[in-house]
Image (cartoon, rainbow, N blue to C red; front, side, top):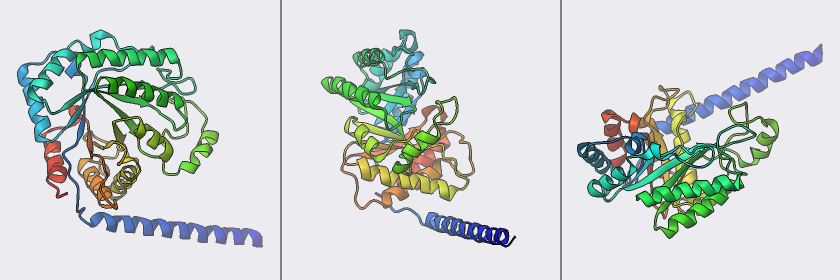
Length: 341
């Protein structure tokens, strides 16, 4: 029984040590969170906008109000939801009957804002999902659909396919072909992607231990590795990082999440492409920990941690227009636009 007592004693010491380390980390994070960030605030920011802008009729007054909101909040790029793609890579015309009127109104009332067609779908993984980007015919139809929206006058194509894993070569091939198309028209290609994986070397382990399909069970995390994020950045004019939906229990931990990914992402690709760090204005799962003010503070602290500013423009991606109320915009302007850079 001596070995049992020794094992219990060692387990107790190990547990106490781990708890102590966790306590030190939490205390250090809380102290770090108390310092006011120094920098922040840019004139390059994006907004994800609801489908009704392309699918329903609006008055000229509504278009003017939208333009005024974009100008007041220094929004340079709006991702107007125009999809989603059907499984075959098309978008039925009935879904975007008022897209032409929207583009006309944007050019009249907000000529400095780029209106991009926000298109995406659930990517098939292990037999689960809707659109199969591994099928060359589907990718061809996606490109044909892109041409339709560019012909309507959109300033760019904004892809949001989920999940995208760091071994997805079909997605990179689609980006290559889409970039050729958008560049030939003098337009933009932007991509929404999950935040970076915390440990690139763990991807093979996840892939082995979590083999089940997307939405059908566990699967290794759909997070880009550093190399994969660079590959996306080299094929895109803009990368919007979906940093939100943080399953952490305290504001300081959530803030550290935003700061960590802001600093790391801008350091990796901020010289290669325009970067937007996504921040939430919707009711999050853990509202006491994750909210817009905390996300803004975290992004600013991440910018502070950079050795130098990125060579390319960067800013926030506000998610989303349909969940952002007057109070949210006031908080955004107070914490981001008026912050000294």
